[in-house]
Structures are given as C-alpha cells and as structure tokens.
Length: 218
Image (cartoon, rainbow, N blue to C red; front, side, top):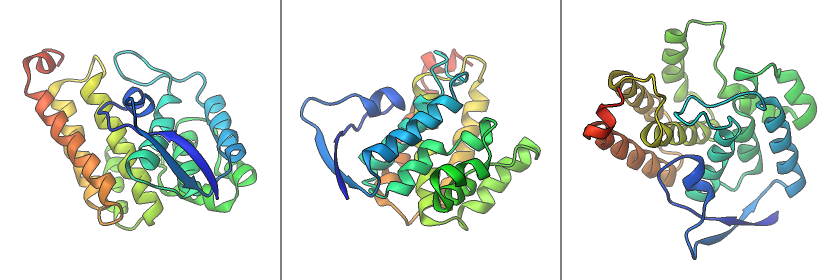
C-alpha cells in the first residue's frame, strides 16, 4: 500500500472544486494502486478522451470528469481501493470512445475491465431504455460499482448546478436530478459519506433551479 498525499476539498462543483485545495486541507490516503498504475490509467483515459468535450457551458475537456469522479471517491468518500479508483477514471472509455472491454482487460486486468463493464451503458439501446436499465441495475451492482455510480452522479449534478449546458431547459435539468435520485436509491448503504455528498449536491441543485438566475438559462 502506497501513501498518496492528496488535497482534500469539500467544494460543490465537479472538477474545479474537487481539485483545488482549501488552505489547510491535506489528507494522506492509502490506496492499493501504485503511482505508476494510476498514471498509466490517467494517461490512457486522457488519450481516449482527447478529442471530447463536456456538455457544460464552458465545454471543458472531457478528461476532467473521470478524474473528478475518482477524486470524489478518494477525497469525499474515503475510498482507498485502487481498482475502484482506476475503474472510475476509465468508466466512460468504452461507453464514449472506441475502447473495448478486451482492450481494458489486456492493459489493466480482468477485475478493472469487469468493474468498468458494470458502470457502462449499452449505447446500441434506446436512450430511454438505457436510463431505465441504470435504475434497475443499480441495486444489483457490486459495492465498488455502486460507489462509482454515486460519485459519477455527484459530479454530473455539480456540473449541472455550476455550469449547465446552454441548451438544457429547466425541465430537462429537473428530470435529470429526479432520475439521478432513482439510480442512487439503489446504490445506498455502501458509503455513507458519498451518500451525504450526493444528498447535499441534490439539495444545492434543486435550490439553484428555483433562483431567477438559473431559471433564466432554460
């Protein structure tokens, strides 16, 4: 087990808040992944997502998102399992790039590839069906996958709150929040700290939707 000196942050937006420090918030976290292993995973994901942008108003680099998901797991959920953090960084590679599970299996092993599979939607299915399957599959997922799902939703909700896509109406944002709560309801009882962070993110998002500044974006 290697000692990682990471910057702890309880901010409310996705990448920026998680990755920037409060003045005196340093936490040493023990993970099962070596620095080299994590760097390999980050480099792989960065290459796969290199031409992609997020849907937020700033069109931020896509790689910010999986890094933020892993940071939320480690810094807010106290997740120390290396495989979980690595799978979090890779969680969108198959779903949103040309990456295959076989490729992940060859580079990072069966455990990580199988964990990524648990959190990957089948893009050949209709979007409405995919979203319904996420709700149905949540409770059947492994504890590691459930934690990745919660962290993923935390980051997405924070992004919607702080920098929503310009073309997302108030109704669409509200529907996303409602759907996210349904997914996470099947992931509870695995990490109390992550669940608290999710509940706080939801509360802040709902509050922001009621403000004139947010409504005017719709």
